[in-house]
Image (cartoon, rainbow, N blue to C red; front, top):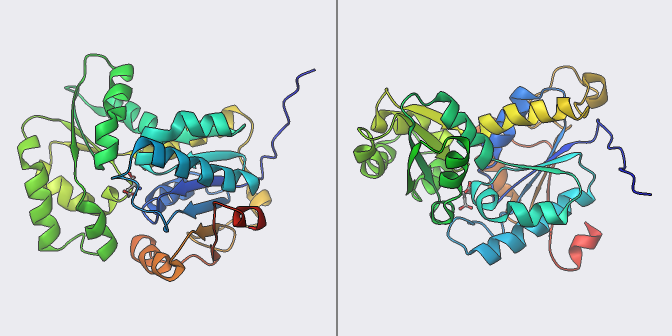
Length: 288
Ligand code: DGL
């Protein structure tokens, strides 16, 4: 007889990203779900994903997902837009828990908030090449028009801490100025772009609504957990007052932990209290 194994609502939520950018999604989840614990994996050894092929991103993403699943999680959030765009079906085949990517929630939030259904999407080269946002937006509203654009230089600018410098303004202007008159809504379809929100807003103009896919994902995850009876309780986390990066959340990286901590502090204002370097592939994965 087939029977579903009940998940413990006090298990943590797993999050993975190609590196440090997924911390913007962690922050949104933390804000919307203060009673949850999180286990985050940043694949800092193999970043960037945004220039890699479907086959490579799929194999990395499945390894990351299996690493987190082996740690006991009740749900997986794929924070990386590139992995969500290219590898969601493969991850879902590999895991027997719910897997939520950022593309669907971002697309639905854009359609819901766009008055004229003229939607722009900025993302990595591989996400744009996949056409995943265009398909997800068309699914939510077939009448919407979509223009997608790769903005790869935003990633190093955010990590360098130059989000408010003239160089970021010049890059944003070069990438985005011609979109100003053709869109009313712009999806920030890459983990790093919320860090550059203010220069992006300046470049596209105040009339364009910005959609943060991570934020939209956090809202959908909250509803999904409630619907499945899996929402964590404050008593389950053992603390009523949670702080970003406190010791109830566990962070893993596949390389360069010190750099991850430094950029985490830049993005979130604090370093992870629990941060460990691991290997998620090969034989060492079994020992982790
Ligand atoms: N995390 C990636 C994304 O959201 C950006 C960085 C990368 O290229 O790996 O698409």
